[in-house]
Length: 560
Image 1 (cartoon, rainbow, N blue to C red):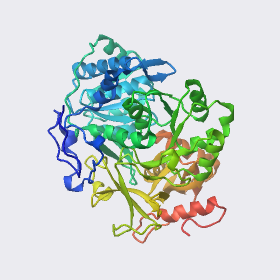
Image 2 (cartoon, rainbow, N blue to C red):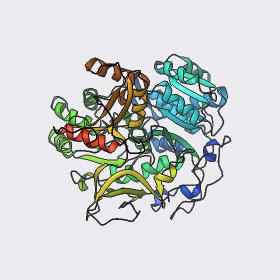
Image 3 (cartoon, one colour):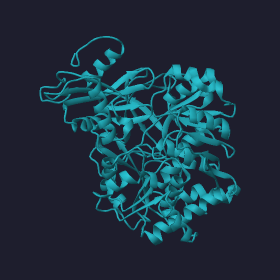
Image 4 (cartoon, helix red, strand yellow):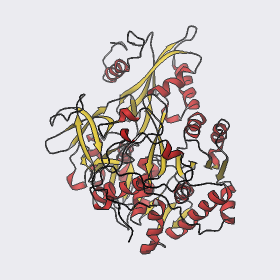
């Protein structure tokens, strides 16, 4: 029996790495800036040597799930045994044809389909480090990740190759870019022999660098270990979601989001269940797929549940038994609308890319409408004031959390802001009640969360400023009855340019061409000047106040 390391208390020492390329471990933050990790639950005390792909696939087959459907897509079904063979073949291509050595970073670019999942698991099995990207990202955003993580290999859906080629032109470390969907990777896999042994990785070897945009607009790489991938399964999924091997998972979040990775890959595979993957998962498509595949567990954002509630009567949703909402705050009216439409309580939760997945939530029988929930077993949370001390119950303050996962930025000075005194400060404002439930109030920073997407205002500002008509701009979140929050831009024009609907559309299309289309400003207001401090810094709080007043029909000046 493999020895368990004594992780019952705080952060353990790093074990000898299985990586030959030590870039990831070399660029972890200084240990003094790490959060304090907690491994109090017995199921979170993993052996020192661990490969999470083996735990998710090989162990499922060993438990007799080899012939059970693992992935269902419109193109067909893969059993666990069939998926494992594809994973082994891709891993063999990575190692034997593309020269991957353990620790190399591999960029993945694809929609939610079987090849994307197989490629993901293959990189992990081979000891590589996954950097997954959403299909909507543009060359500039992809290029930043390629350079920041010094990525040497990319696997890409052929339909997304154009932006990938643009990004690759300015990525000196990238040696190989292989596509699936056009026969290239498929041909290599057909020639590759399966059976490549899994890499002997350490439980605390980095296996994932998940990029997220911060308030500066520069993506931050969050680094996660092999053990982290299992820890979210053995904390949130095991104790709150409580799935079983007969469950059928479905949802809309991209696998490149850690919300989608957990809900559509890690959680089902940890228990030998089935996942249904949809490349197009708007409310109508998702409703139809739930009914057609008799899905039992759904993951999506509040805005989707709101739209689905209005259309639910036309679909047989009697198969559903659990519905998880995350990505943005869950408004109580959406909770009630979904319960009226389906009889089910939405399971709210808050997570963060830095924490990998959900750390505050509630089981169905413990849900309080409007509250996010209580700390997931294995995690601790508290509300603190500006001095870092816990505030009395009922007092608004900053959310601090710690547990088996936590923030480790890739070579980024913002680590010192996110982790303080051993706690992760998520950038959210909360109130904790006397019963220990946490109630969301607002974001504490300039991140805009719209329809489940995290959008950095400064990044949108940079895209707008590259248009020849824009002199200055400020971007904030504005209340919206349909999406909860939308991106709103306040724009000061250069002389000689006239404001109007035509220019609004031109600016929106310009942003869509510069960065991911979902980040574009859905509202643009032309102003004479922007509110600034005496030192010239943009006062986004003044813009947010104006946007909120405008949404409620109250006229104010942007700086008023």
